Image 1: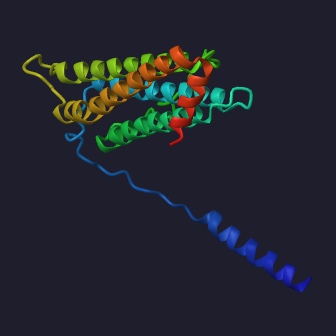
Image 2 (image 1 turned 30 degrees about the vertical axis):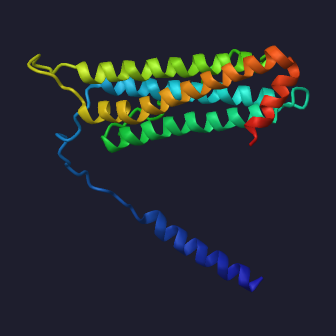
Length: 214
């Protein structure tokens, strides 16, 4: 009991002391000339982040579908879980890029919105790969649109271009190459699976699923 009283007394003393303390951080004046992304380019990148989030959720829906015991295609489930992680990582990288460029000092709360996914079931793995290829193609077209906006933006005085060389080079050299390779890989998988199912039916899909686990 004595220990409790002593502890309570100390807590009351320190609590009162801290309550009287006021911590203020003085405003600092930081030059903003280095923050040079245009509004249209910023908005284009923010929209791309949302597209990456949507793709991630769609791949999660695909993965969950094929992971069901009634479907039992662990290879496709693993493939789409991996794709979902990659799309989420793409969104994270773009958020990090905006941070590096000093463009996430406000309006952070509405940066990511939970997307609406309308499709949760696929009759065959061929259907899912077809949708996946379409999804990646849409993402690629969206990235190209971002590049177009960020390299064609005009300066406010309409004299010369305000081309965001670094972002355009990054999206062209890193993102687009990864997208094109991903599209080619999906097209190859779709071609192989269709051939296997033509000759072996559902057994072909079963065998192809096993190859995805290797």
